Image 1 (cartoon, rainbow, N blue to C red):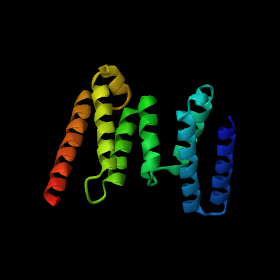
Image 2 (cartoon, rainbow, N blue to C red):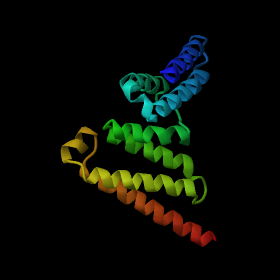
Image 3 (cartoon, rainbow, N blue to C red):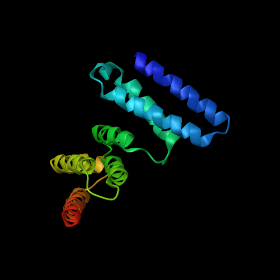
Image 4 (cartoon, helix red, strand yellow):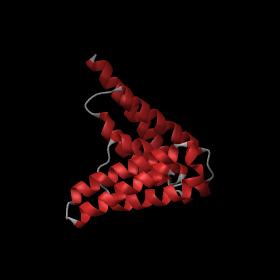
Length: 164
């Protein structure tokens, strides 16, 4: 509860910055607010505050829009969308996350993100067609995404072997 109250201070700062016309600074603060809220949501103790936390997360996402998020924020956002059944949004955030960590060469962070994505797709393939459709994806889209990750993973590893 204290962390949620503290997060409200960041929201107040976002609003002040926006009123002063400092749009970019406001979005940067909103990104911090979102990251804090997503972290709070992961905490076991926050289960009784989950609805209130998620309401604030949605407000933060509206304030941020399509602004570029850092890998640390996307790492928290992907499971949030997945757990709340918004699979298409989870998939979009996953590919943004991959873009953030891929850099010029294969690395452990990228490998971990790709593994997380593959596990997510594998789990989604066990979902009913209705659950997938409610989440904004078809079974074919899930298979295509999975194939894209597998292709990316094998291609990136091959490049690393050629460089090494």
